[in-house]
Length: 293
Image 1 (cartoon, helix red, strand yellow):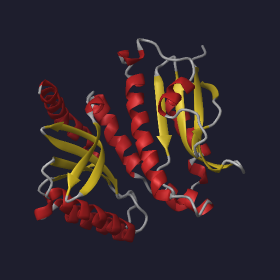
Image 2 (image 1 turned 135 degrees about the horizontal axis):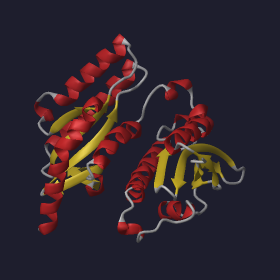
Image 3 (image 1 turned 30 degrees about the vertical axis):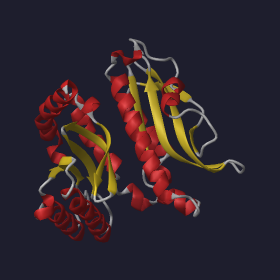
């Protein structure tokens, strides 16, 4: 008995120069109409791009890709749960989904031609395609670390299971003449936000630098009247390296204790399921109350 399922996929490309046509693979979109399966993973790290093209704007790329990932995650939630948004049907071709977020044009980030195949395990095949077409070309150091998006995928899965991820939306918090953006937030009068934060990095110095960066943001947010709570969703280092683990412990202490941390809650990835079960009714209650205003 043949249990294989047809699938389609497209590779996202960063095209640095349209004249030369040089490009790098920076993501994969995967789709199966029969089982309502849609998944997109985009490469947030930009060092491979700036190494290949020194004039590329790495920070702009990171912000743009992060925004795209959030939009595709929301679409995946609708497709995978078969919500009525799609009027009880799903398109035959993956392009009809991709074009809603990233229409074809002459920009530097575009999907390539659609390909396809048959599989008996969509998740495993997706991981294999991403690994072969994107991850295998990364420097070894990048392969051994995780991005904030990688950590968000762990927490978003548990929030999706609680059926509350659809209530989250981007927002901007204003504090001390600075605007701080959050991709995953909800409100009931004041904002509550989720910020994935990967400390699964190779070098202790990188962990320290990132912790101090967000410490500065904490100090600014402490004075904001718009923010109620900020949850840091932490990705722990996977390497059993004493220096790395010591840097991670110091990072948690820096971010989660002290006068500046009154609005901060630290949630580690092993707590993801419990956190989702605990926060889900709060999200539902807050958003329901907000709609009645």
